[in-house]
Image (tube, each protein chain N blue to C red):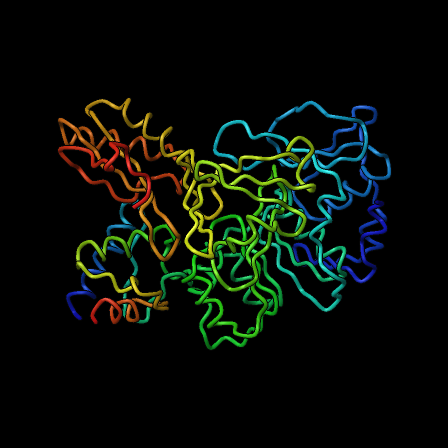
Length: 79
Length: 382
């Protein structure tokens, strides 16, 4: 789980820095689309696709799993 | 049909935080340059409605345009509503509609309903939501110029009971609003992009008592049909029986429609450009014949972008395709063949800065050879 969390933090960092935005402190409670992170839905989609490619997992294949925070996404990819 | 007769007296518009009654909307006159007769209203719903009313009274055409610079030929000098196609970047086309055609899909009076407008007031979808709310006596909430996240925040603060939006908007809404939020939505309408069964299931789970329908429409063909059985695609039976006064057929894998409510020059058989596949009792949408990708209602011409990429130095071959995902439906990805990786990277990065965010390849994969389908074509969806 810690590996996945680290991967998510890394990928968020890459997405933010590629558009010149600062990366705030990331915690499990950080929500993706509440405005805390300066990312949009395309950025989030990119994050998910990258996570799938790197981890080799496709947790949404059978159906969408709702998530809003880094912690919730970490749990989904850690199953 | 007179426009003042179709606006229900209970209709209310809440725009930029201000409330307007029907009397207040009717009271202001817009200057219409007669005899030219073409009016371009501003960005607001109020402006659009006032211009429609004035144009109807003066029996002149009105073009709903927020500044394309287009000066299209006017087919006849009587009350017609001109709506621009969304298209991609490049010159949009103007389609002319009679008010009767636009009103055909309006629902029954429902003064209790509160609708959120998520579309541009000038778009076909926007006009349908506006006319529907006005004619049914509903409350319409609008705030022009808000980005999607801000619009969702507005929705969360106002809790509209009825929302018509693209599947991408609904995906974002589902992600942004906690399941614990006490927000009852009674009418859920999806349009502007293909819907998938997973999204419909998520919506049904979140709002189990809502009526849910997805609409297939285009600016040219108008509102073709509405599906309310909870499944993506539409029933195969409609290819024989038609639906809602529209007839449908499939030729060479493409959907053709014939609708009496289409725009003026499109009321015979119209090639929609949408590829479809019949699987048993269901017809499924399979993307565009022209390879255009639709993300959140924005159209992306993958082939045109690919040609531009191929003109960059060091790039010997490229393939742009839509990578499916559960968040936005698709993102653009690129496969690149190049001789000098670091030079190519620089050029691609500069090129991407010139593109709309939705067009930018979000992943770039450097390969020795572009992957092709079994028929030797570049695959546009993955």
